[in-house]
Length: 425
Ligand SMILES: CC(C)[C@H](C(=O)O)[C@@H](O)C(=O)O
Ligand code: SF4
View 1 (tube, helix red, strand yellow):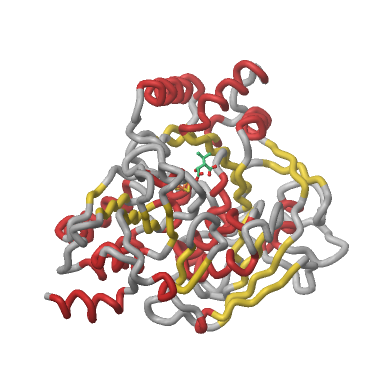
View 2 (spheres, rainbow, N blue to C red):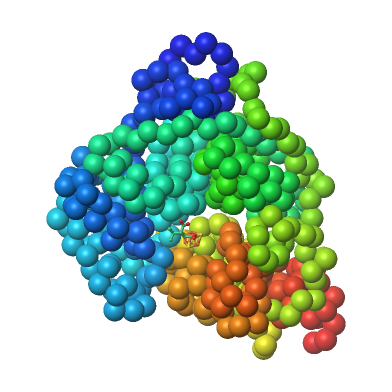
């Protein structure tokens, strides 16, 4: 599958050309085949309405549509329960896939189910659908109407985005994670620094699949349409993916912007309220009293994230004035964390464990914040009112920093524990 291109192409241009019927470049209109359409619980009702009332259509390829009940799961109110009931009925009637309460967050589930793969086009009714770029899939979020059109026709059209090239060089130092690299990238780009663009990340063979998901996930916080991590070395093949040649960008492709992030110069980072690009060194915010710590979400709720938290929390206790919520991103993550004792470690440290799903990430249930409260979260958004009251404040960080903060009750680095807590005990 490769089309003759007249000049070198970016990764976004390559994928959209090969999945459409002609070579396209930034600014062109592309019509492409859609491999997977994902609908989340909160949008399911409008999706169904568009399909049945506006389009009078059924999904053209029901096996390519997934409904995931994850944002408010289990249901919190009667109206949420009713909407979810309708989503289940719709799935049963049309034959689309249903991932029900407890299976996990849509993006994690689609990855685990192998529905996002190199070169595929995956549309989600959720902005963090950029996550699929971790495995070189063109993943992007769209509204209920566009999602319904794609489900009804099996195709979508979009303007081919310009590309920003981000080069990751050097090696992360111990205690610094992909989340810190992602926050740094958003700081440099700015919250609207890549609006409707493709962020094409060149990292060689750095970063595991999970870390690549964290990077691609955060891309939408710079406004990006898609966040593509170029497959490097044997990374993706080691997870069993086949990587077609045509997903790789060409030498000499045109970028609107290029930046380089030296991972070896990076310190643990924290995004302060109320924009994701308000990023500082954790040490600059050290000492800020914290009421709630949340470890989970599509950004950092994977097994390696829970391991990083457990490493910090093993043999320690959450600070009495602070509550720690831990929610695995999926049932598979939960199973692994049960099997290897991670959840026991976290439970013994005083964490409150939740059902796999989005949890309190967007302030709808399971840990809503009161006025004036401060939360350190491993999620991806810290907007005003995001996790509850408009006067609550959300700080974004890595799982290790979140865990250290939970132990000390104030913003802290894991290294602070050895000095402070052990000093007091
Ligand atoms: C509810 C959903 C549509 C929303 C999104 O689009 O991202 C949510 O997942 C979020 O993180 O704000
Ligand atoms: S975990 Fe948070 S950011 Fe991710 S899909 Fe759910 S609500 Fe959105």
